[in-house]
Length: 284
Length: 159
Image (tube, rainbow over all chains, first blue to last red; front, side):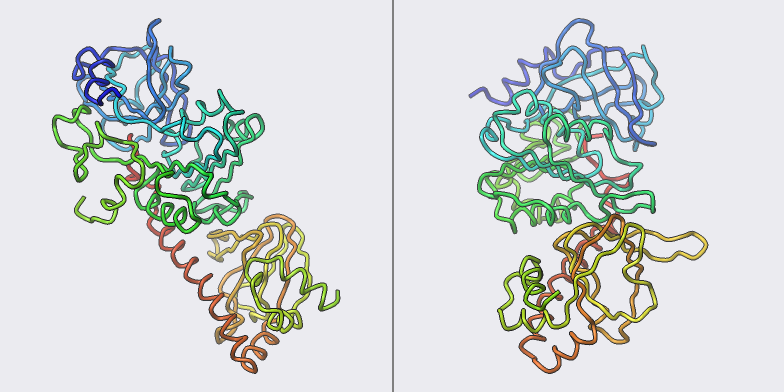
């Protein structure tokens, strides 16, 4: 099996040098979240679901951002970005044709093959849907090979929901059982209100035959992992994506150290037994 | 609807599905089969908490009245869930409004009838309390998570 370092070296000529790419378009998903489509100028981006790029804004800085597009449509790469910091705010001000730097892809990926002939339960919160969108696309390309696909999605409010049109399409076209909940809503919202773990009340999982993928804020993931455990989904069949402040993205700088791991190189996707003992440690 | 039929309906609800036949029969004596149309209110803040509702289908939103700011929906409950424990706790008043977001079918248990049976049969009362405590614990946990506003600006997922 190819080592992570070898994989990084194969993926990028010099892992620390960003490649200039132009912005094809920007779509605002919500008031503070947008998807930026990068034009790869005829080349292809080979990436796996769950991997991330370092996106560089000249004169501003660089940020680790998950890839949110379809791995089998690699001529354009998309990142869905929550405008929260200096770099993401600078990216939000870009327009079509502007140049940004990209290096990557980096990191481990959501395993797809483990879900063959099994049910899939995806639990996401907030912007956490973006890193799992490529996994969904991968499943859709081979839909018949997988059992049920259940998507439990929690957001802050109805206005903060990502990919609203796609959610309906995924349900209609690919038989995804989409359940959405928000933390707060007004009387115009007819859907669920409450935390994402509440949604487990409405789905019956065949726990032993289910592969779970979890991504979102760490607190939300901890509650979700408890719920999956309560419902009997084995830890070995539960995958999650961890987040720490990433700088070099190749395991040199140590910024994203998480116990014995570097999130950028060994993660961000882990199988639960790898990190379960670390989730309870406050200092990490 | 006959008590036996209500017993069958109750048996399908997760809150009481594994209750003993004897206790289910006691419970059925306080039960009625109810429907609420979309937009109607099942419970009103400040009014006497005279029922305990086991939801069979549809969705109910719990609302807090914010005076001139209207009402804020803080939680929804759906099939297999329960609504209200104020029937058990003095002064037996609702703390929220409960609005049917969709058409709702439910089993309503008379609060006073239930309290009396809990007092008269402590084994039955303890069963009810254990089950309600579990619901309360889950709701409290969910409320804590909701209060954290985990999807706010510092949600921190690779952006």
